[in-house]
Image (cartoon, rainbow, N blue to C red; front, side, top):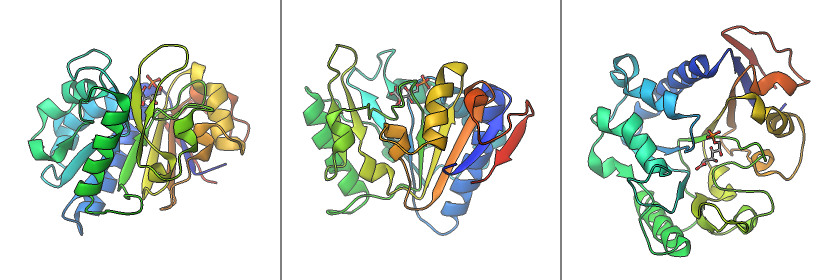
Length: 255
Ligand code: 6PG
């Protein structure tokens, strides 16, 4: 068992637990930091979490002026495109909360994935005021693909093997969305990482990710800060051997 696993009944209870823990983490960091830097996950799973963070119960707790939002990965599409991770976060969260515009750091729109990756790397270095080494996000939210990918780090892809750069392009071999992604060294420099995993189609990948050593992207995520949390629903947890899956609102399994 790598990290802490919390099994929730369904996506809604998973999202509520994620919102609770997100708010606790951000409030704690904001007590002694002028900025709290979070990298957000894309895809569909985290949408409900973002909607909850925009609701009064959580929105009233969050120090929006200190919160800086980045993206763990982005598709190379216009910001108003249905596949844009930026658009998903803007619709679910950003347009409903008083986060200052200058605190929102989307991947720059560029003519190529390589240009976007280089531009985002430059922005990270400027925002973290760090010309060398890897920036340490306070919290990174990640999803899990059925193939074990996370962010836009895909099995056997060049970006997965990158050890120096902060941001890499991902050009899928067999068509599909061109992307840019934070690299593993950046993910693993984080103080905390929350994985949000929902659905039976993720069960096999989740079992490998939390129970087996290996070379899948999600198996290589191990944050320096030690905070690795898996927030999963019972369907995604259905193939786990190291924990008993009880359909309860929340059950927590420590390493
Ligand atoms: C993306 C995400 C990607 C996602 C997983 C899970 O841009 O697609 O960063 O890594 O988290 O593919 O996606 P779902 O949450 O939609 O299942």
